[in-house]
Image 1 (tube, rainbow, N blue to C red):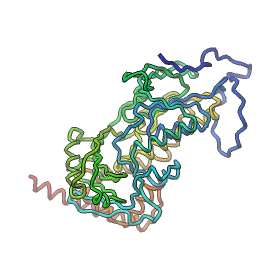
Image 2 (spheres, helix red, strand yellow):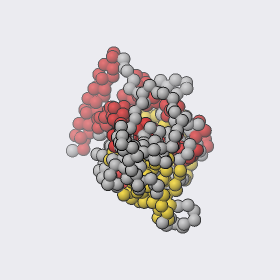
Image 3 (cartoon, rainbow, N blue to C red):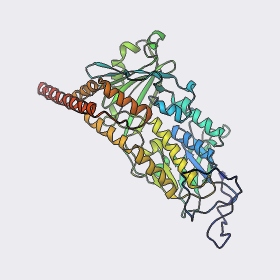
Image 4 (cartoon, one colour):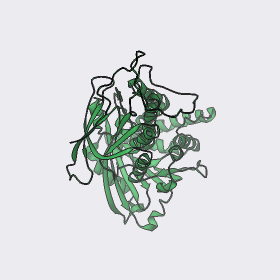
Length: 462
């Protein structure tokens, strides 16, 4: 069995009467920063090594976390089983992510500047009229984005392990290591891999909705959706239609609680849908989504079929000791829109930053309080977004008449501007009081009409 162990976990002893601190290799002084979070005064210095952290999972959350850790002086290990993973994901990223994460434009397949929202009765509303010339929604393939973020982490010093995480031994005290058990796939050990272990000071669980790290810390379960997606290669003349356009379909036929989509990629389109409440009918909803878009994807050939669980809300526990969850493992996918890529990468980076700062760039041991700063910052910044989208989903996705009202509301330019500005830049956009009042009145009117239509439809069904 391979074993990567910490040399100094055994035999640590107090080196001076001042308290439990340990010698570390001398490091160059870092420039003074105005705001700085440091480890607690009783957090021991590490002797002869830097802090060691394992990141389990190599998606956007894991890649962003590993890069930030490695840049911050942390000895970093990223464990990922499928280095060519193609997660079923619409692949939409906001404009701010391109700048925040310094993404090269050549990994962005399409720059969507137009979107069609299509109601249950096939009324189509064009969205995107308020976008400025430089603004767009990026469309990426997950296998390309994920590989890029992992490679960049490796270039900054992270150790990438092609392995399957199995379980984790929890330490009995604050300074002993977490022992990770995994199967290593190095191309020489066969399909079963080689049983290996890794000892680290802290763990970031970025291993998705079925997180084994979450199970290791008894993080609790959550409701999840099933996302189903087909990649469809369509004729070139039809691909022109989707050059800078994406489509979203709503209706009981495509999903009782979500939406169907057609998103453009480099040389094909991704056609998909999702549901929480009717998982067993997901293929039926997928067939209906293809049927709704039939005239635009006719002649297409399915080149890949993908399915994956998507969390619907954060886990009951996202932190335990020196283990924190990020991305899908933590449950960071928004309702209504199903967005997760940006929030995954952002949470991975924020968690890693809390470890870097708490450990003073890898020189000290971290404790739960250091990682908790990440959760406090995350909740303060993004919790309102999740709650608002949760309410929108409950109000507008509950029936076909409500969805008709939702699409009608999306035709309003003020709604489009507020929505796109908030999405593209991930900031709460201050509204115009008069326009907000008009929007409230129009929304109430749409919902009243939707309710009336639903009552009439119910009468017809009696």
